[in-house]
Every structure is written in C-alpha cells, then in structure tokens.
Image (cartoon, rainbow, N blue to C red; front, side, top):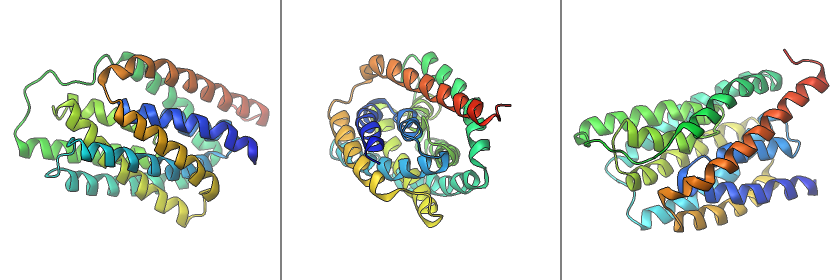
Length: 255
C-alpha cells in the first residue's frame, strides 16, 4: 500500500545516513516497517533486503577510503555469515506474538546501551594481529546470530565491541563493521526469501533510499555524528515500544 512506502522510505533514508556514521540504523529501520503495519517477521525480512542494499553502498565507500582491513575481512565475513544464518532460523521458530514479547525485553536494554555509550574510539594499546583476528571473528559470529535474529543496533554493537574489546581504530572498526553487517544481512535475507517472508517491491524501493542515506552518511563519516544520532534512535525506539504494547493490548494478550 502507498502509505507503507510513505512511512518506510523517509525513515529508511535517515537510518541509512545514521548507520553509515555510527551504526544503529537497524534501530530505526525495523520499527519503521512495523509502524507501517507489517507483521514482525515480514518487517525483519523486508528490512534485510533494504539494509543489504544500503550497506553495500556504504561498504563500497569505506573500501575506497581504505578503512577495510582485507587481511581480517574474509574471516570476519565467514563468521558473521554463519552466525546470521543461525540467528535468522531461530527467529523463524518464534510466533509473531513471541517475537514482539522478545522485543519488549530487548528494547529497553538497547536504549540504555545507546544512552550510556560516550565514545566509539578505543583508548587502549592494540593487540597483536592473531589475537585481534580471533576476537573480531568471535564478535562477528555472536553479533551475527543477534543480527540474523533481530538486527536492531547490530552496527552500533559491532563498533563498540571492535573498538572496545578488539581494540582496533575507529576507521578500521567502521570498515570491518560494514563487511560484517553486509554478510549478516545477506545471510538472513537468503533465509527469509526462501521462507517467503520478504516483501520484495517494498524492500527494493526502500533499499534505494537506504543506499542514498548510507552513501551520504559514509561521505560525512565522523565520530561526532553520534551527538544527533542518539535522540533520533531513542525517539523511534520509544515509538516502537509503545506500538508493540498497544498491539498486545488490542489483541488482549499483553502478559
């Protein structure tokens, strides 16, 4: 329906811009589809299509800027692909109501994490290459599971863990995040398409908006971008949270 495009596309563009700068675009994109009236599984599945297109554009831009460590990228990509396939298959086992209930539990923790985070830059001495690679692969695998299952905040979590836990630079973390997130989305998208959950036309049109937002965001990349990212993410999270509660209430099934 037309109103779905009118709700989804502008939000997807904004989310793409934010995601390219600091991650967290999924905190806006998934709620955007739900706010437009899509059932939870269809929202997640269609979001994977538009996000895949947008992240592809951002990844190309980061690669051209030399932010991707190609010695680590293939290993992280493989780990995230495997994790995402596991996570998306787990998601398909849940009913729509169970998925919404899970989101009601997850969302407050995500909001707290976003508000609590002050910087994405590591202040510690970097590890040797082998230790860094192992840490990055573990991060890619487990965040890949989460990304395939839900996806909201995947980019933000990756940036935080790659800089804070793996101790790699902000620029390299941003590039590695894009590679990991790209594989997470493609793996999950394949699972959802096979299971008939993706709204192809809406996903493609929204994906074009996502590509535009991601490319502009990658061009404007700076860690100071988080100053305006947080308010937008929190606002959408609150709207998403309220909508899920209202749906439970209207269905007479809230806990």
